[in-house]
Image (cartoon, rainbow, N blue to C red):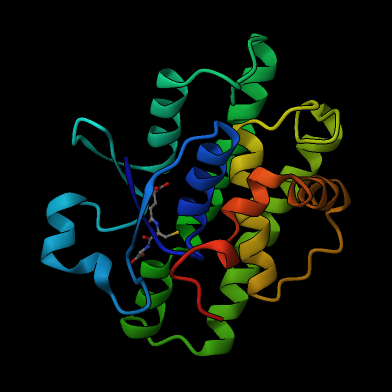
Length: 213
Ligand SMILES: N[C@@H](CCC(=O)N[C@@H](CS)C(=O)NCC(=O)O)C(=O)O
């Protein structure tokens, strides 16, 4: 399999964590988002959405969208599971994953930030305020959900799930963008626990072949 990825893309990071938890290896194909490679015609021929990650499976099928990729990996390689068997806990995992993937990440995606700057002419300070606002909105909700329904060392239990695959990269983005995360004690406890695990360490931006500081 091949994974088209960028080292500090949080959506790629989600898939890298899932791959590492399942013990799957891929050929890493770097797409430099800073250089705009995701918008090039050759890349759009592979992924019409023009983003990373993109998985090419062993049969040559290309698949975009991090949650679809993780779902595909889960179907092909069910052990260890990233979705719990208990229907309500599974729904809680999906609730948190979708909070990150649907409500948080799209608002602070690179193309949105570029549009704010290049088309709408917002200042760097306004763009930073936008970024921090949507991180705070999302993590406030994540913190409340984890306090109410979370248990164990991970988001939901003593094994990592899709929720952890999504939460950890989103927290990493917030830290990289200097957001104040001090109000989210349960979120940060889960984040710190995950960072101690080999699968999360292997998937980290700094461990990727295209990493640059
Ligand atoms: N919903 C998609 C989002 C994919 C996406 O847009 N990824 C970002 C990187 S985190 C990207 O490639 N951005 C490029 C851009 O906005 O130009 C997913 O979950 O895979």
